[in-house]
Length: 331
Image 1 (cartoon, one colour):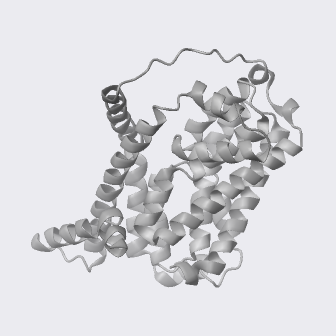
Image 2 (cartoon, helix red, strand yellow):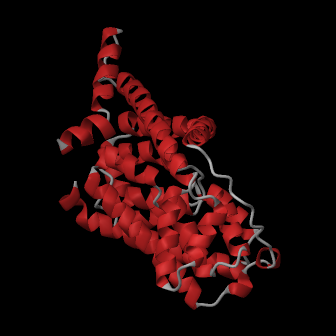
């Protein structure tokens, strides 16, 4: 039963077979490079957008019960490492990219929440959202997905705790520290209102990420069918002990969300890249992208920004090597 759910529900193998049959019926050989690329592109694009729609609908509905003010109050009830854990968990049901998470981080910081707690949220929000769990499960299986989420939460909690211990509150820009959070009454929404809001967010998010999905799937299709396997193995496989570090650093200047990264990761692993290398690249893209760091620089000073980047980079590299070690046991 679980294999059926894994393959046919999350992995949508039925869609893969259907598209393959349709392309063959049109006289296109899906075993050829061109046919295989088109097959990969159509299948992954449709699969990711379908999963995206369902995920956004569910997550946005859940989010409607946790507006920023309520989230602030929840976080304010906890102290110490417990607060960091709750902040990291709340980050899993918030926006899918770091640029969307930063405004919430700024609001929580202005509201007076401990700096370490807000950073735990900032790290976990793009790195380990529910979208990553489902999408990774659809491609690499539940073991990889669950372990990825767990280690991501560990990075978020450890990173936030370390920043809290360093007492870097003076490294937050003054307009953030002196900001006032206005408590606005939250009108009680009906289930119909929540569903309507969720559907609106599905449409809005789909418009925002469609281009990234198409670009990511296009790159993945090219890698999957046109890049020689020995090239990938040589650079990102077992033969290069620095593959994880290279992948993490290369991912930082890019900007995409997990929906654009997943097809690239899928194609690289299929070509022989180590799982840890691919995940390090993916985590670097979605957590430390250059545009999000530029945005974050407006809220915090260079010293704190550098510490944040260093903590995330070291954590990502350690996670990459960890997955390289356990790859044979979980795939």
